Image (cartoon, rainbow, N blue to C red; front, side, top):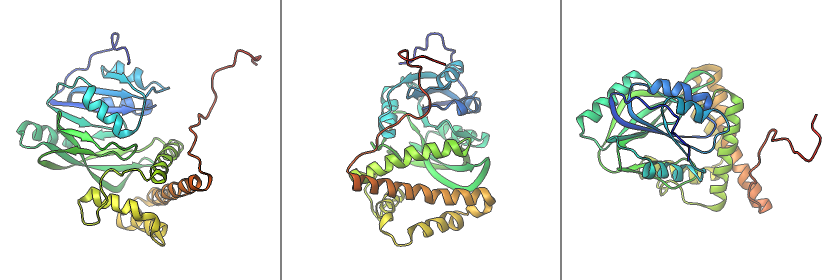
Length: 298
């Protein structure tokens, strides 16, 4: 656990909410996300998975309550956060370090929390890529009454399960996916490996796949059957390019649509490799390490 004795203290804001984040090497986002939150939430928590950069330093400097815990999957980490952190605010919000709340969204959320006639809140997240906003939006549940949420226990693509009435707000949250393509590709490499392992092990998905079920169940049905669809990659590109409207973002939108296809191909190819070799992926550490005292240094 991180020692907070010498850290600053978070100055409670106007909203009766605890913002919770998890992190691994998010120093490139921490300053901006904490400036974005300043003056709004009552509490801010960070569960860090032993970052090697300045993530923890920046968070402590801003008065964030930081703990560290080995990462065992997104669902596991989020459930730990909700069960073990000393959250006292009446509302809890999940936020990723690469997300930013517009002032209009903060005002809408505050209004709902003050009314108190909802158990959870869904909002719109808009994707940014290569420094440009894409016409790609998701509706996500990100706010709930404290104690009224648990996450699906999956390694990636976790989902909050909130009981009761969910109110939707229309103001947008910006998702700045990665600072550059180098970072984006490294992250997608880890993500596709995790998804391929799930597929190879035939692990349970975030929800029961049902074509005629709710939105999450339909998404899981498509995920389960995607790799048996003829012409799937061409169809997927045109879905991102035309249906989601990535073409409106010009070259950045075209690159994003192409790369989404690459991600799905990698999941399929990594699963195939496991089937052919019978071996699971080995976690590797790239880049230089510490000097070895047994050999001469130059």
